[in-house]
Image 1 (cartoon, rainbow, N blue to C red):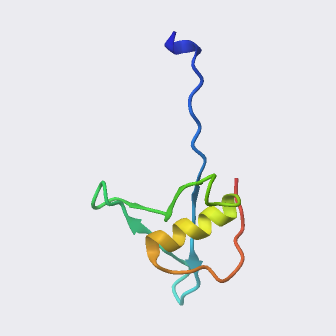
Image 2 (image 1 turned 60 degrees about the vertical axis):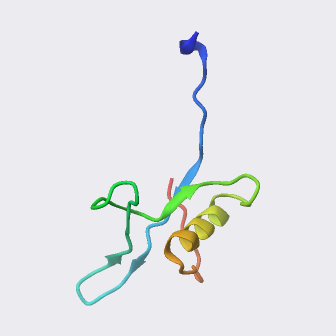
Length: 78
């Protein structure tokens, strides 16, 4: 029955991009296309055929959603 099925897992990544400013850290957010007026971190699902892991997926998703690249290192938070 339905209770015996395991849920399908879809690993995903989000990128919290911070930069210093005179008023404290600034965070880059994107507006949700499916819900205008709501904001979120850039991110998406890990693509097993295109990504070498979470960091690769984070860089790809960030670039796709913001049209910006990440030149520095990423810090993974679980």
